[in-house]
Amino acid sequence: MRKILIIDDDGQILSLLARSMELAGFAAVTAADGREGQRLLEKQPFDLVITDLIMPEKEGMETISYIRKNFPEVRIIAISGGGRIGPETYLPAALELGADLAFAKPFHVDDLVAAVRKLLAAAA
View 1 (spheres, helix red, strand yellow):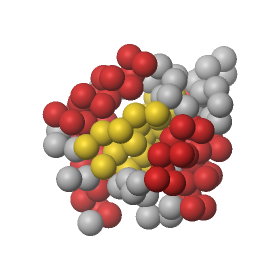
View 2: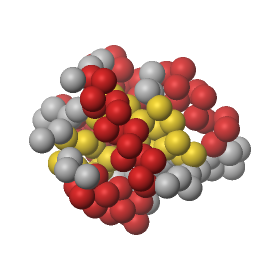
View 3: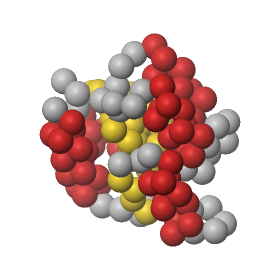
């Protein structure tokens, strides 16, 4: 079973995405911020990471850079509502840092699940 790490400081988003990924047949693990996500990545392998960009305790941009440097085979999807500036500023930067795909919040969960399937199929 493919393992997905979901990193977001919004507990409702974490629950929704974890449940959606599990219903789609993936094993989902959650982290409340990039620092916790980094600890989990160091302890166990993941096939894909979904990370929010604006978070306390290590933002998504730092997390993406860390993953690309230390776990280059892991696929990454960045998600963001954009904070004060808006997602159109943050999401292109996430792609430049190495995210494979980027989604602006709000997004349709089915679209995210389809993107996860496509990225993992391409990585197989």
